[in-house]
Image (cartoon, rainbow, N blue to C red; front, side):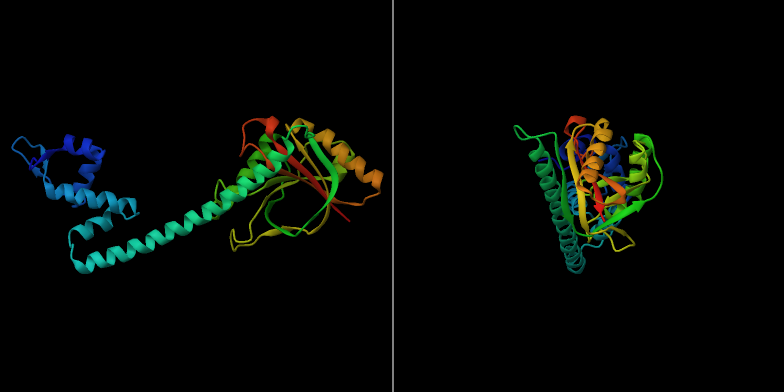
Length: 275
């Protein structure tokens, strides 16, 4: 076994770039000796320290914390560091458990809507039918949009405004808000706002709600070019059955471009509260 290793040998052995090794040296975490040629040579003590650096970086410690520890390594500092490491592991565990929960909810939604509407012999549309929905928490932005790009921009703005408390891959249904008077005039694709459904534990800040009650619902699969047809089906059913509807028609993107890049696989729900 050699007593000293060059920066190239250490870099290959640990998969650490030479710049990182120089940074560790600058932070005082390792102290390679210099040869007469000016090259750095790393001792077994440096290698031991690199093992500690690698493990502590993995646990989320900063190089500043690691350098302080390595430069006063004794039982009290080791105990303090390990206690902090346990807390960090517990924090990561809680984060992973939360991630697992929201991913499972997203899986259930995709399997539920996607699976049901893509079974052999399944119709491309379900409904219209009356469904009961509880009160649902949401974030909402009331602003008009006509083009798909404008709608996407509003949804992105709404999402980013609370992104710190919301996981990107979480199960948060997005949607647009249309008005019944526009639909009755056959004004298609005019939105008066957007919303993002929330889990109750998402954040403690101010939020709005979609009211509980009986909704007239229609769910269809495929691209959004079907929207005029599906809205006509929804409103025709309401007239036929003599149903009084609210002003706002919700367009909920049950499966959209967050789940698939294929429009034929989209699943969209149209819903309007019954008075």
